[in-house]
Length: 318
Image 1 (cartoon, one colour):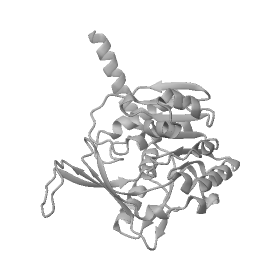
Image 2 (tube, rainbow, N blue to C red; image 1 turned 90 degrees about the horizontal axis):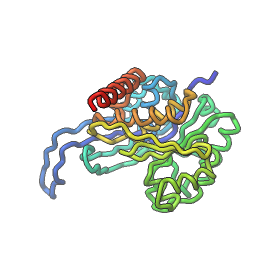
Image 3 (tube, rainbow, N blue to C red; image 1 turned 45 degrees about the vertical axis):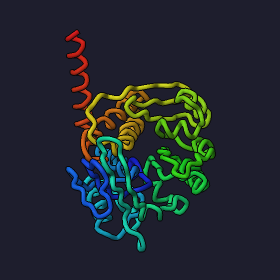
Image 4 (tube, one colour; image 1 turned 120 degrees about the vertical axis):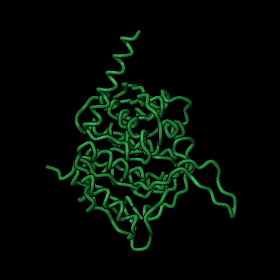
């Protein structure tokens, strides 16, 4: 029996969330805001917390600084029973920080990547990763680490481990086409709508999905307020988003990933995985911070019951 249900590889940092900033101060000025809060950030860390909240045994593999922020993240991971034994401590670099401004409207970010830049996919201890039934990898940087991703994915697949990857934004702007070669070695490949269109070069998600289905049998694309769509074994499935009030969209995609992969690892069908993913994303946006609103299993089930009741009441009112 494997020690972990999932090992998560990638970034962890601190999010300082600033709410109510009406305008940036000019030089020499001071601006007061309505709130400023500290949370765990980083897509991989938010995904790991969300998955652990749903009851899976999760380990995290990343690099933190030897500082108060790094210790804060370790304490939070421990609070959610996330195994931290695979986390490395940087001897030279501080824990990363992102300042998220006005998360309730058009978000702006100021980021110091910090110790996250020290994580080298090609230098991972694969025998340690093999303690998990499933491995989720983030941090793909196109041409910069493509060969390392390919090597790790091929080796882990040979070891009988299922794999998923959240593609992430390409800040180089290259949108390296080697990603389609990489997809072939993953069981589930996730991205958002903008990323899918940039990588494929097509104008529509339908065209993008048809193209990518030749590279990977299980593609998931997040569509934001429109929900999410999958193409699994050439069958396309769309699930609409749940209508909720939005407070902070930070981490919504990572929460979706956790809900979707919770369903996948539990042996659920695509429709159920999409329901889980969209519900986790919907609950995530209802609170400040990328993991504050993400549900445990009981909260997820209560959300479905509440939504079903609302639909019933609406139908009876017609």
